[in-house]
Length: 332
Image (tube, rainbow, N blue to C red; front, side, top):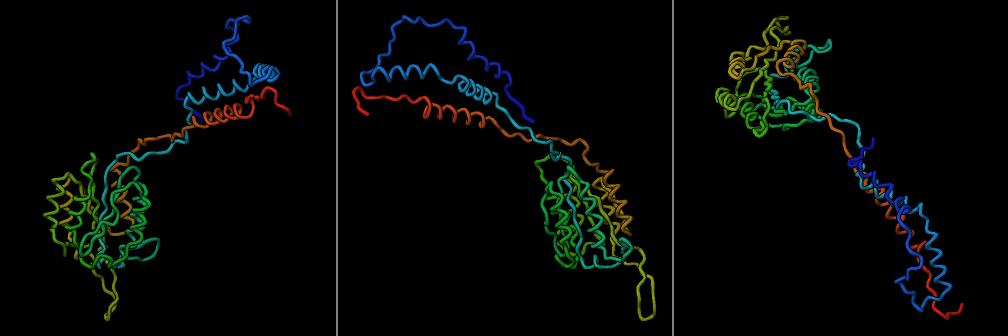
């Protein structure tokens, strides 16, 4: 729709009509303008008659366009949602060698832990409207894959493109937490949340989980840790099938301490359904911003009537109101 910033300026449109009510000029008054001798009498009469027949409707149109331009018309576009300052959420994903263990079921098929995580975590990312999300991948070291952004599609794409062994086969949990602490924007006042997803224990890195925990507490960061892996897995061997615990190396005690001392929570994901429930619970613990801010894009339109009025005035002066001067005594 079109909006006028100064609609009261439209009151100036009828001002040219006031000229009809002004007292007429004395016809007997001697004109101060003397026609030069270069213009003969016949040309002067034509010029005077032409001036009296000036297209008043054109003048009124030009005036109207100038007044409309002065009202500063704007086009208001459709309302669009603006991301609100909900929270900063960093997602740290374990890419160690143990994430290739196929002990998870997804849509009736057995998949490894990383494939399950990608599928379920993608839905969680899509729901986090209004949050600034970041993605950290850790193995032998921790790497920032996606900095803090409102672009959830980019975060999900970067997650989908991850492969096992990309950053090594060990598990640097301490480095992942320390990198998240460093990457949170200290200039923004928002809830800072770290979602730590791992299936093992700290076996690499320059910073221990205890040292990283101190940094997180000092910066007011909440850690939600998720231990991934089934409790029981059937494995084929030379002696037949046997039951094993594929999550025997999961350091639950350390993950629980990371969560409890930062006012977070520790979750255990033994299946894809458990992971779905965890993400739904996270939506309750860290609710998504409901009050979306909206804005309507503005496009200035004043230059259209202004340009058209100037074009009409210039065209009239150049082609219509240009007097023909004829030299006195000139022959055709």
